[in-house]
Length: 342
Ligand SMILES: Nc1ncnc2c1ncn2[C@@H]1O[C@H](COP(=O)(O)OP(=O)(O)O)[C@@H](O)[C@H]1O
Ligand SMILES: [Mg+2]
Image (cartoon, rainbow, N blue to C red; front, side, top):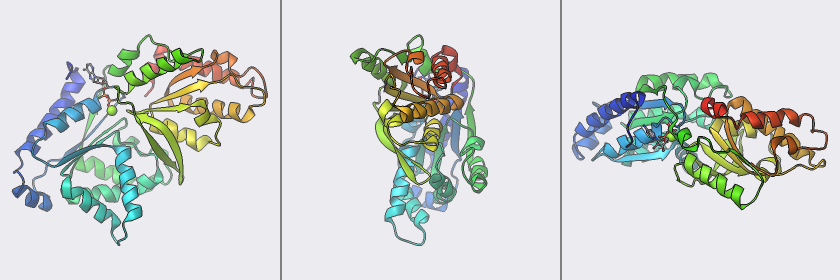
């Protein structure tokens, strides 16, 4: 591990204390019984902080240091997709209980990276699911960009979600990975995040930025569900999502899709912004809405484009409105935007 800053050291101590307690637990055999009674289990951790602060790194190092205990580390979104798939598959009066049984059978430490709740389907089952896991003696550790009180913010029927937040704060120790550098940002400082013109060099520049911002993991396709529909994300990793212009603006996407994007990702990559023709009104309208939404959410943006922002929409009914978009596209390339964006 690299040399840790002060805030990281404090969080590292909380992780070490939990690892020590987990490592002291009686080993399997005894363990099974102990866990099934839920006795003497340490509280799990909820670690939150800004992107690039080292949450995933610290959790992974903690995860590796826990020995002799069935453990699992998974991305929160992937975990919830498994849960929804199991819900669709299982037929019983207590589907959540059955899912929790299945998890608890071979996982006593469950680490969920990048917890974020934007989908009502997740929001409505998380309370019961966590309760069922805790009751079965599963120790939960999660990382998130938000404090518990910020989860599912502005979500539909949020009042139904509030008991879960209260329970989360009671059941897990909430630790803030506070002020300090965004280490990922350090790596891309002074690089262009608006790359023009299009071509192999631009593609390679975006690939390199993608690799730096996702720690070289490549990423995988995923689906986000929005009001019962599904938005396909061609590549996602470490809070970053990558699309082409046609994925986002040539398909019939609308405001809720763009909002879900902004809520789910701290950084959005868009390959191949073209110069729009006067006839491409819907595309222009969507691009304006997309950039407005990402701008309002403080999202970081990396794009490759055929021309400078001011030249992307030279004609057509949205030409004047696009001036604001162009100005936002410029602002979103600035160092200060990247520093403050979350
Ligand atoms: N103290 C540090 N010094 C140098 N690099 C660091 C430090 N802490 C974290 N990093 C690196 O910064 C990047 C972001 O860390 P990560 O754990 O992914 O952040 P988060 O999960 O909070 O977004 C990783 O590549 C990590 O190895
Ligand atoms: Mg992370």
